[in-house]
Length: 558
Image (cartoon, rainbow, N blue to C red; front, side):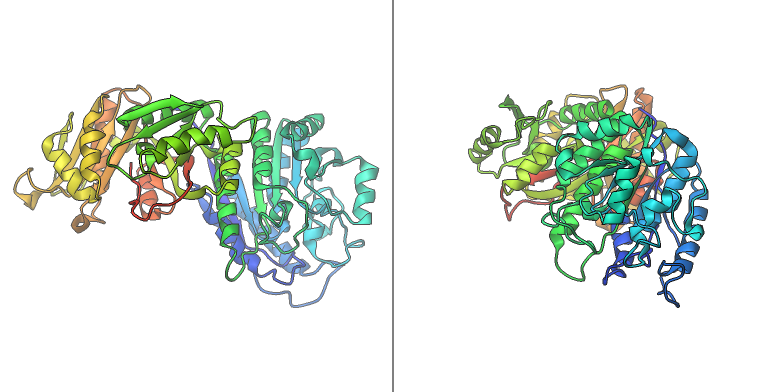
């Protein structure tokens, strides 16, 4: 297992710096954006969200509120001294303290990449509106109101404007006079151009500011000041991923999300997918570790039919309609549609394979950050997003050594899928195809495994239906997979799953396995809370693209 840097999400619901007529929606936007990042630690800064009691002060609207909020953000960051922080706004002004902290840490080896439709390079004297979100970058450069100064201003040569396409004359003069690096959207088609611009600053670390209006409104329009001809989500994610491969990420800010009262659910899906890609890029496990987990998972959960064709691994379990590795195609590495970008020929292999088996074509995209072009191509061809999944990892010994299980339980562990355990799986899984999964998948696992069942003391024997079960598949020194953790409805919220996990983790540790991984649905927050409490942490995510949905497709579970 590879140690990952601790990180945290800082939610800052500040809206007073915006000049948008719907600026108050930024409060909800900060929370909605923060909800999309699966951090182990999250802090909501208690900023003042009331409207300013007076008019502009020294050319800045709501200056007193903004200054008070800046102090609150600084205090919150002091409580996270060793964490890399993702800041969610709120207006762009929430970035003052996070960038200030990154600059103090890295000095002149820091570059600030400003993904934004606008330059935000006004001063109080040049701003036509007095709205501070148009002055944030200039303030970070030392030319803003004293009350919002950072003390250690950036140099213009440390800034790279990325995707900026709306500069007022005063901002344009500043960019030209100071030779600020500026890459408009067209120049970001190749991420290496951005990497080169940052390299020319001499930076070793980069802070990424992301105002969502950098996206083209045809892709995402839940912002206050949209501008045409922006970036696609794919191009933005590719650019950030290129930065992460070449520089230390000193921090990330995602700002200016104004969710509408109703509608625009497509925007929410775009932002959720972008957030997951950013999370994998920013805080996920190293790529080689992810690939090793994925290789183990393929062997740990076998499909009776598996073949390689046209750059795909095609998997199928007869009689089973659920997703996961039972009935999905996985792109081989390198991705099947890169660099050509047109998936038509490659997808015909997938579509023909599953059509011949009476199933919709389904593709597993995971980790999503490694298959951005494929995901964008599938979406453009009408493949719908389904079943977003987080992969969590933990030290086997940490889970095994957790709090002692509750009294009044008996744990039974077998190193083969016995008839009794398989019968319990079929009963507790309660899907139409549970018997096929038991007989064709679980019974066919060749790797060392442990089948755990937990019984209440009052059950009388270990032959009835258990309170909970779990399956642990080893065969690798680094990883054991955790599958089929199911609790009987009558025993939920009684720490049955925790008892199952501790027993399985103890078995894995006794086999010399160092880490555990498991999959959990993106929306299954109770399960995520349970696993986090036992020591599991986010590693990466994956999802599925389906050509068409089948009404009878049961909820996936692997």
